Length: 178
Image (cartoon, rainbow, N blue to C red; front, side, top):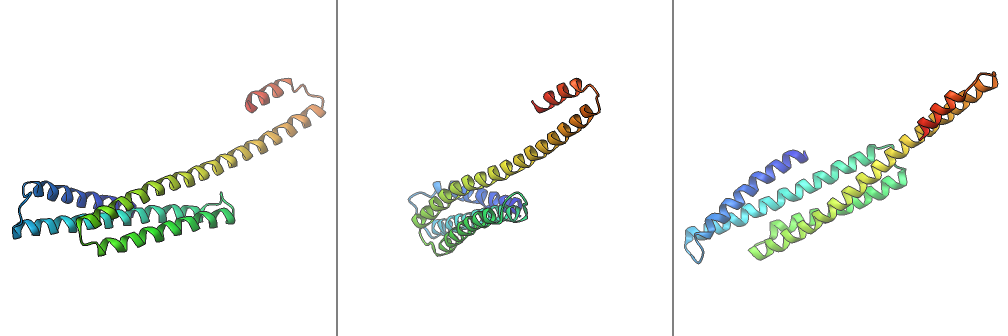
């Protein structure tokens, strides 16, 4: 799940930070031990980036499932949003492949920048989809309100036709409608 991936990512991030702090003490050292530590730092960073990518994909898959299961969107809207999500997943999966092929610290930095930029863009899109879902739900509520209001008007009209004073009901309806 997204949550377990986030937890795993945080654990690896802790290792990355610890290794980075340890490397500060070895600055300028070219010993075999220092090289092993640098390699460990690269591997930890690659693992962190891989976990980050997995978490992003899990978040996208979760939203995709919600969209697919939603009755708040037309099929056309669903297909458009799902198509955008699938394209983003493909883009991120391609980035994941490049993580494994990275050999230098500079390669890893470039990939990290790409992942961060992609995540920022993804978060904006996820917010947009959430906003669309909220609007759709709000429209459903408004439509229900309008139907209730129509039924209330008909009931008041039926009562008025029978000669009953409906001024108090009309006042309550006005209060309800506003």
